[in-house]
Image (cartoon, rainbow, N blue to C red; front, side, top):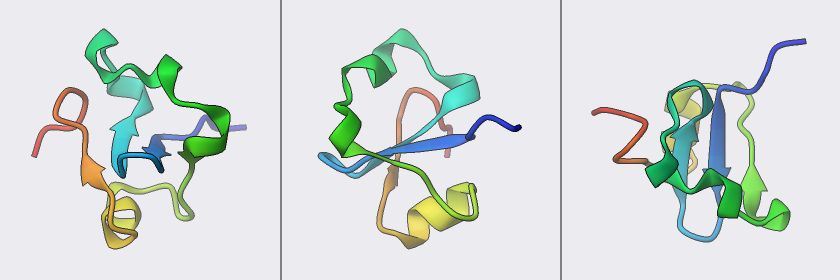
Length: 60
């Protein structure tokens, strides 16, 4: 089974790249109810769903 690549935070609409996350992302502080994953699991899908890139783990 593959690990998810992207995690969205529904409280601030920021998407994180799990393989590139840094301590500044504060992913561990995202509540379970605020987490969302994307199908397909791509940055393009996250952006289509109105999420913005995390400035720490996703470079423009």
